[in-house]
Image (tube, rainbow, N blue to C red):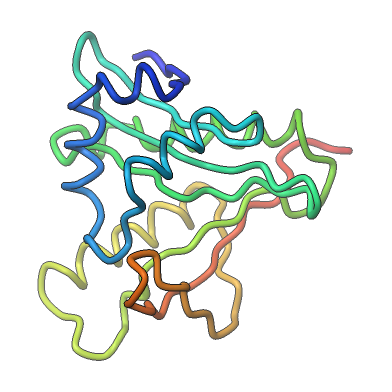
Length: 172
């Protein structure tokens, strides 16, 4: 397994990265390729591919927010056939190690997560959301007990979500 940081040139050539991205996130929650490429080229942006041989088995995009000294995880996904094999844990721990080096605060990482108990959610979607929440909790994530609505990424759709964070993993 290899974690590779991508810039916009390598990202635009990587159809597998964008294929996993489109499969992993609903359209109303996805940013455009242009926005992701800007993130990849921004000094505070991080776009990663988790590779196993030539296969892209996971992806991450995040932003270091220097004004609040926080790593905001925008997207984290592992291909379904590689889930439950500790790849998610490895990439999440990698993000924690990055934040330990960059940030000297009690709370270091923040991200949005779909609410499993949202009205009308059932069946496979409920199971997927609950598994995602359980993954983050098992790996040290904490739910912030507040009402939060994700601004419309697609320009139209507001999404009720939970906010989660991870605390500093090493002493100051």
